[in-house]
Image (tube, rainbow, N blue to C red; front, side):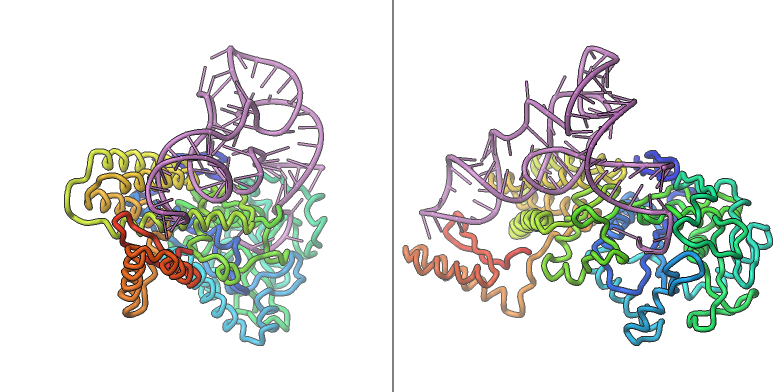
Length: 479
RNA sequence: GGCGGCGUAGCCAAGUGGUAAGGCAGUGGAUUGCAAAUCCACCAUGCAUCGGUUCGAAUCCGAUCGCCGCCUCCA
């Protein structure tokens, strides 16, 4: 039974969707005004594992993740600049051109990380009418009020406001660090719709004049449109709990009168030297840069080696160690693929090994997606599998092991199993020829020549291994 | 100031009452012509510090120290 940690109740709860086997899952997506960084990777890899595991458990998942392409302001008080507009000006692009560019960039990075695409990736700009409708509904119900072209949510009308963050806002605290817009009735009130000033390019017509939606509106609107009034799962980064998710709850539940979300999931941050990695801090590492030094599968493995609710500290050392771990996997899968087949029976030993692994793996994943523990189970299997291959075994044994790795490691965790560099046309035969040559040299005792050849091949990025029967194998180095 | 979290080996990181997973690095051995890969063994009498509860605590309670997140857009 899968248990998930729910941020609202602050405890692990057994996961029961509203209408099994259907699962409606919404995750806060990126604001597309720049390249994605490692923080995005942690978040979306984490929720990708949830998505994959739910599907593995035969749930029918609808995974919705927004693309925020309507800029949010840089601060809370009607001042500040729209981030999308600002970046568009810097890059001399149309705002839509900019968001399209970085949306594509985002998907490319996520594809590289083997993150399955969401079923629906709705754009905020494509859902303005729905957002206006929600604002109208909140006005009708007196949960909102109009002030000089701005519409604010009246926090006073929603007693549960702040239940997610556990924050009881009083007026003294509010507005200390940011100025309070003076047309708000209560400093805690937040904007649902904002009046567009003359120079604001992104603007839409509304019953209240030209403007643009408030920061929290799109998630409520798009999630409820594609999933329903009550979501099974809503995910996002920890830093969104307040105010973003508290506001989402307020405006959604005030409008529908129904619980908005059954399970709130929040992933922790990536830190650099103990400090949060963030766009506004300027200490972020873009995935494009990172992939130059560490292949995406290694980055994914590195992320999965810590729990999603724990902070992940970035360091080259940690990534190097993930790289070595990835090599270990490649080395096994490469052995397996050269030995697997239909012949023979799967031995009792392998059977029970696989059963044990599966049980440990499920136990780990069922416990709030404990991927470090699930990986430990998998690495135990790696060790045992190597041991089996070192001893007498059948092709069927190798195949069974291979299939399990594919199922648990590949399908559920999305880790890379088959580096097996697809050699360019004829490349495979060429490597075989070279391997044969090294074998011949060794047989004749010409070790200096054979070793010089090995050194050269290793310089070129190929690993050379000598088999017990005197033959050699050459394959491209892992990662 | 308010709310929340963290501190486990050289590094990374699980474990939330029953006697410290896993990965990386390291050491010794097997294998090898030598390597690589692989296997075997070793590698925290101790989980920030101090006190308490308990038959039993890394795990619960209290205090102390250190670090971080949110309270303004951010995954």
